[in-house]
Image 1: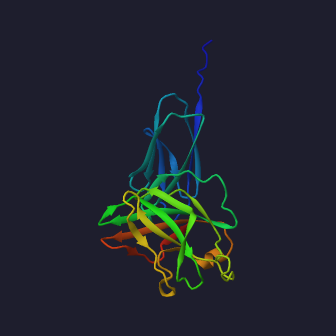
Image 2: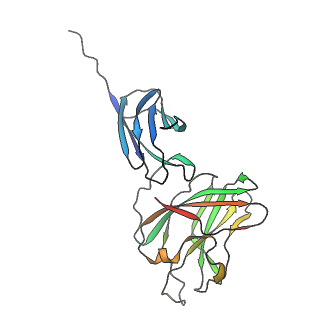
Image 3: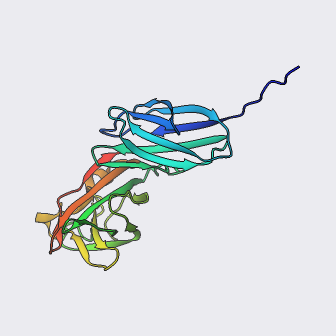
Length: 242
């Protein structure tokens, strides 16, 4: 005649983005190890439901190094997405975009690794494209901008549509897309693009060949430059499919 104790459980789901050089990780809540994950896998775990905060810890499996942690009060269902890569030295919780990449566009996130005299800078990114096929002049794509991107952080996502040359210009090819980076606090130009056909690749983040083919690509671009006293002119930035 003793009542059976009733336990309620919460689900913790962890989706681990598939990316180059993503280490194997251990999932831990408070002091309890829930399991391990490889990149590209989603794990679901159960813990006792409680009204008290718990700590989710993400550790490197090989060394037990703490990579990420978060304190939260469990709900019935709790879901986290992780973006961790040794290639870019990034470990972050991640909010995936709710919509798919449009077929006529490419989706980008920029990783800000811009330093000035060894100090990481918060930056504003502006986007440009050649105004003519000769690439003798550029125009700003005013519909796009990524402002106040913290050093070492990913920017919000941005969808850049396939970009043709302006009316009156030959329409046989698409335009490449370039960036300029500005110090978010002072407005100082940190990264420029070089004009003229001979230096047309400098500062490029999407090639015209990429834009001329099918859209729907999702890419992380590592904007990395060491700027001392003059504006940097940077070869095409390294980019990685997401």
